[in-house]
Length: 170
View 1: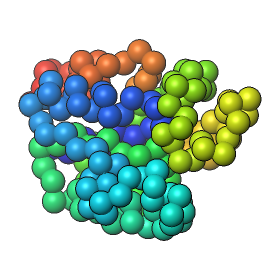
View 2: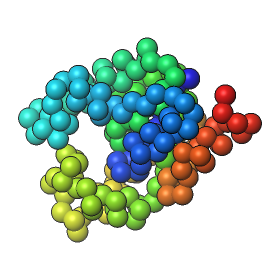
View 3: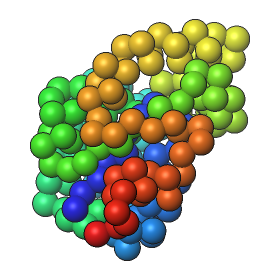
View 4: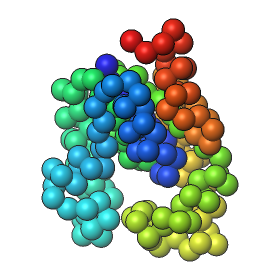
């Protein structure tokens, strides 16, 4: 079993992913952490040094390496499903769950962690809401291809488990 959590940055993929993995007695993997371990550089530093285009190509390779994993919940980066054929790969290789959140909910979370997000370093706080709205408009067609869409503002690991496995976890 392989479950991919997708959604915009700060939608809770990592936190919910850890909880869901524990609840289902699965391993947990964070694609961003796998990237950083593989390339021995933080994503923030990588973006600053090499840019987004190079990052997306290497992120694609790291995603492909998850094909060999089993019994795992994988949280992806916010943009992962939106590049190359990544969403098709995710759909072919596991069950995908989109943690859908409102723009105000995302903005409230992102205001607290902006400095850690490479795509937000140049975005002024006054422009954050417009930036998130524009990106969501571009990304949501990919996110909505997920096997399951849940309300990221209110659905936790137990809620996701119940929706994925109505008769109880396997």
